[in-house]
Structure formats: structure tokens, C-alpha cells
Length: 444
Image (cartoon, rainbow, N blue to C red):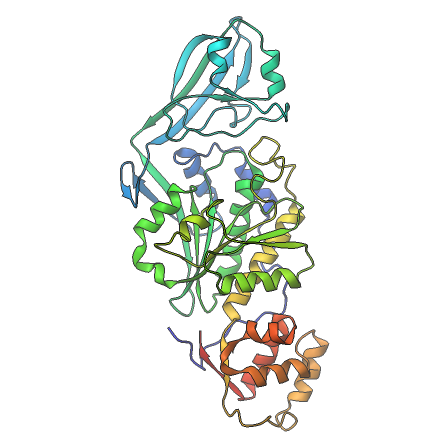
């Protein structure tokens, strides 16, 4: 709904100051790391239960076989144990040591196999001989083990005892959701995937940053609501979209968050149609102290490709540091808790928080009387600007730009870009002009 001149507008000048010091992103990554997640199953539930210890996330269960767009909710997979043992009883590969050792959705097996038979079900990385690859077979009705190539080459017995204690049966797909209400019905969507097992950057960094951001926003609601989704990749997004078509018109901006814990620069992938979220992310990253790269939309990657499918075409981009498939640790056991860092997670949280903050504050103003330049001195605005300047806020040129372009057509971000100045300074100028009765909000 349209904003009114009486609406209290969120305002920030602490661009990189974290609001909620009570949540430790790195500690949360370490808590979640051992849980055996997949598309479905108890690992996902346990992950959501951990998230629910910090934010009031609601948990949905969608039965196996439920039609969702062109898909059906798959069977639920759970695994208890798995191993490869020598016939003398020595355990060579143990799921308890790493939940990457078993191909996701492997059906159960208990057999003695020749090395040649076993080789057809073993996955390694010859170019990274000491890394365990992450592999899935969601719809393959098969089984498999992943291990270090060096380990597999050392296994030269003729036969091995192989066991996977798992089940694949009718159950549910599980996802979590939290809506932080705003002052209007419009929403910002923040989406993260929760289906990967022990991968710290490509999975857990996004979960931790999203959880921390939700804790911040629960303290101070903004102009728009912010909806958080914690979902299994692809099928989770498809399922949520199928179940929520009636509310999709509320989503005005959004981001998929992933790979936010490494020390590389930031990468922002644009939405399909190029909208406000892309301009805001570009502006925030360009003004930040971090290296950044803007990427065009492609129909490959994370769940932005579901949200941006032509039947929905939602304004959703993707924010990441490392780009999927482009760092050597990607989808391997090298993506562990030593690969991500507390400082990198906090930096990512600050960037995401600022993008959301700019989206919340990026309204359109119009002059109440736009005929000529108003007298600033008699309204005390020169004194106010002096105080703002000392606090790092607006200067006189910022105010003049605001007063000139507050014509009902330019957003604050438009003005900031035209003036080549940080958004926060134009926002501070708008707050001064609003208090002085020179402008009013004319739209959201």
C-alpha cells in the first residue's frame, strides 16, 4: 500500500555496525556442521530446530507425492550408518567420520562385493586426492560412497563388506519460514538452502547470516516485511512457490544468500529482469570497503533461477562471496569450518543488513512547494547540517540535491547516484527536509 507522509521511516547512519552482538555466526556454523542434511529427513528437521532456538521460525511438512508445479515432493530419506570394511573387520570408510562419505539418497545395501563391483559405486577427485567429494543421487534409485582418491587407491583388497543403513520411503519435505512484519504488506524475500550436509561455506554460511539478520530485524521492523525461507534447494523453492502463489505479488525485492563465509570479494548476481534490488546491491557494494563483482543473470546456480522463472519473474538476485563451482573447496570436504571465518561472516552480515536497510529506506519524496529554492537559514537547516556533518551525515550539497530531485519521480537511491554520494547522506538530508516540512513521502 502507498506510504503516507505520517509514516515513520527507518533511518540508519551506522552502515557497518552490527545491531545484534548476541549471536555468533561462526559458532552457529560449527553447531550445524555435523548434522547430516539432505533434501528431506531428520537432518533438515534438526537444523531447523537449531535455527528455532534463535528466531521464531515456523516449520512446514509437505507429504511425499504432493504435486508442486511440474514436480512431486520426493520420498523422505534418512540414514543411520554406513561403512566399507575389509573382510578382516577393519573399518575403512565410516559415515560417522564424515557425512559426505555416502552419496545423498543412497538406498540401503548390505553385501560383500569385489573391488571391481564396488568401484562402480565409488566417487573420488583424482585432481584433489585428499578431498572427499559431495555427491547426490536424489532420483537415481542407486547407492554410492565418496572418499579421498588417495584412500581409494590404497584399498587393494579383492573384496569388501559394504553396508548402508538407510531408508527411502513416504514421508515429508520440511522447510522453515519466518515473516518479520513491516509497516506495509510489501515484502523482501531472503532465501537460503538447507539441504547440504557438512559444507560450511556452501550452505551453513547462508543459514548463519540469514538467522543473524532475522534477529536484527525482529528488533526494529521496517517499512516492508522481510520473509525468510530456509528450504532444500530446487524442490524446496518449487514447493514453496507452488504453495504460495497468492502472496507472490507482495514480494518487491529479494536475495538468495550463499557462500558468504570465505575471505574472497563479494559477487552479486542480478535478477532476471534487472530491478531495484540490483541497483541497491550494486550501490551498497560499490560504496563498501570490500572488492565486489556484479554478475549477469543466468538460469543456472541457486534458487534465484526458480524465483526468476518466467511464470513468476520475481525480483530476486543472489549474493555470495565465492562463486559456486569456482573455488577448489566447492562441494568437497575442504569446505569445512576452517575454510570460513568469523570476520568474513560478520562482514557478509553487514553487507546484507545494509542492502536490506537501503531497500527499506529507498522511498520517493516530493517537495511540498517546489517553486524555487526554499530558505534554509530561517528553518535552522544550516545549523542542522553542521550537526549532521560532524556526525558523518548530510552536507549542504546533499540537501540541495534532495530538494531539487524530490519531484515525485526520483527515489533516494536515484538521487544518491545522480549526486554521486552515499545513500546514507541523501537519506539524512531527506530526514532534515521532512522534519522542516519541505518534503513528503509520495510512494513506496
